[in-house]
Image 1 (cartoon, rainbow, N blue to C red):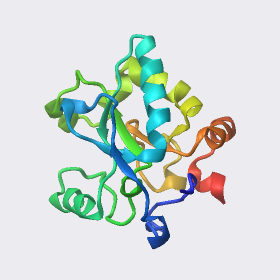
Image 2: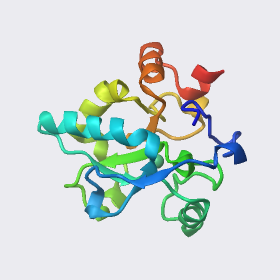
Image 3: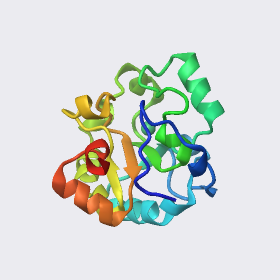
Length: 178
Ligand SMILES: [Zn+2]
């Protein structure tokens, strides 16, 4: 699995990255839903969640791997205006996860998808996620590079070495891989 695989509006998921192992994450999940992730991210994801927990912070995975059918369903039902076009979502390779706090209700989230930004969990994540191989994939102010609105909840696994370099460079994946 190429941890730097670029998936966006101009780069659809290619056939050669469609074979990977998907497992049920053992991290805490929002509403105790069963969430699948790419097997290669699970150990670092657990380490990140445990590190947060040791600081009294509780992270919950709210979305992980999605099949093309699930992505199409989310896109078509129109409830989430930020949903990526089917074929263009990093969730389809299981390297992306959405993170939320358990005390945020689905209603509150629908009213304000940016509510997670005001939590201590978010503050900790953006400072520390790179240590576990994750990057905030769609940062504020980089919309012209990612072509995706700012998403405080969406984290992408790129491997620890890449994440350290990306964090230092303040680049987004589009800039880093080109
Ligand atoms: Zn996401």
